Image (cartoon, rainbow, N blue to C red; front, side, top):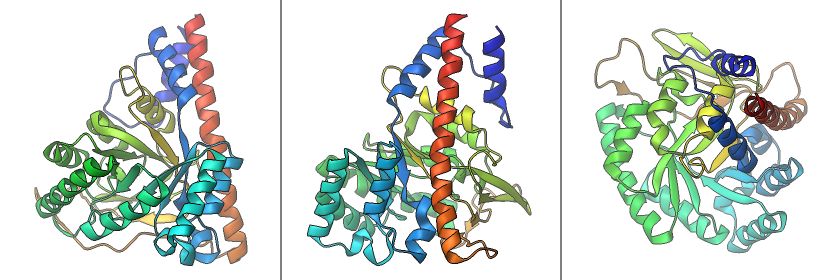
Length: 348
């Protein structure tokens, strides 16, 4: 049928994947429509990284942005906000943020860049005050991959006990080093329904994987998503990436979103989709074509989002805010396009 073929062509655009073309029955089209209606889109603090570092943008600003753009909540790193970050907030300061979120009817998910006991204990303390139930972590160690996996499993087993006691849900993000099958192996070993995976649209590039193929491997365990647009950069025998405005990258955005929306037989498996616009973000490759079975990963420094040297700091901060708003518009338009095409398929 004409609309089915057109939709499939759009889904396959730029996919560069070994996966088969998706099936588009009327039943699947109806399921897609229902999932789009209830999708939870969250603003992400990293979309305002420069405004946090160079300006005074904090949690309240992020909540206001989410409210103004009709989003459902925020994903916020506990170090976001410069001198006003969540770590430095008093109990009263954190309670004020919780009350503002409740007033605006917005959810809050927290994030840290570690799985260490010290960091987990810190974020759980903050989560209790904010009444947050969802926390993102990632395994951040150097060493041989086998050692990183072993440390990750140990950390996540501790996290699983914390999650059980506080009724929390944790997600592990594939932050550019571990491959999808390694992450799944870790999750299976931890064996906790409260420890799952976050799928980031671009991070598997640095692990030398096609993101769509990685999505297929990780799909049984994905409960959160980071949406972003990036360009792949060939470097030696691997790939780095640079963040670009939505619609200008190398990723099959629609196909990945389509696959993710359909996860879950009766209820949506993916609970939250965070919009993480990262224009100017650069990160190098960590996994390579010619690596051995147990490669050595160097201790890593945080990747950097660079200012545009041709613009003033103030212009950079304004542009970052504009790019964040444009990402919301782009993703909403993508969802609307998928909904319209699905309705047309049902009518055919």
